[in-house]
Length: 394
Image (cartoon, rainbow, N blue to C red; front, side, top):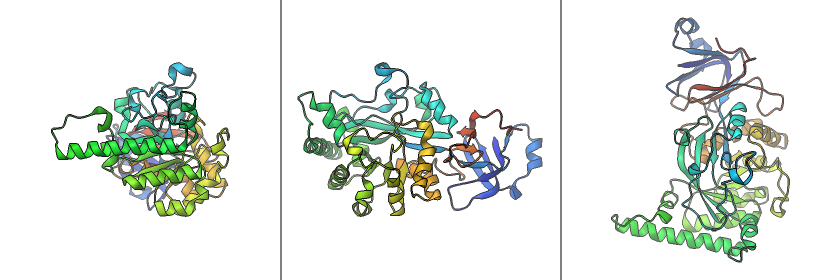
């Protein structure tokens, strides 16, 4: 059992506790409340309880990265460690990120040290359909033991990346029209497969289309790589045509089509605004976008798109969004509960509440400020990172 005492408990639920405690047992949060309800003497006498005295420091849910390529595009390994894009076939829905993510990538340690306890990880955007994302905890050596949800989304991409990748191969797509057409064709074939399976359950499963069933059944969303406003709206058009859930990832020009996004009702994962504007379609990329979307009622998270910008700077990205107009509370939500909701895992992570996973980050200040240090990161009720100078452990 792990108990955190005397922390400023920011739950991301309805109530915070300026002097609170948090109890975790068998990897799950079992109690959150005010220190007046906590028997400190009993904790001192119980040798089976590990106690962290937060000393008034901020205790909050583990931070969540809602879109990245950590471990599938490894740092320092070049082509040998890059498994992000199977860029010889523009439609590859049957690929699974879990078969390529290397948890030995240094980025996982950087994430943990920054208080990031879980991440949505998957293929890149070179293909019209890239494959299946997975939502993972950031601590571990075996992917199968780190999985929270897999598959968690189906990656699709619009705009420059598929165009550029296939323009030199003398095959489609080389236009935005072809990107949309290929996705529609694929979804039509998948829907026909769904119909055949429904009419005859004895139909031999087709590995190429079986992976679409969770998408068509509304269990997981399309994860749409979109920067430019027209690409955003093309993605919305197709998702509406097929009645699908979808997240708008990057959404760089989302602030230019706010009314349309309000009507569409899809959430946005904004970023990587810390990266350079190295493509035409990201010319309007700015930290103000996240705030504009959240202020207008669009469920919004912030992303680093690691390794496009480094994952450990995720809370700083949220801070820069706050600097450019997002409210402080929405900044916290963009890297915790909003990210969890968008990734479809809010029943497990994203806030501090009884029944949820014991993922906790302790900071000596606001993590969105550059001088703030991570004092301790807890994942599934176990300490994954601890600043030895913090002197928090009894």
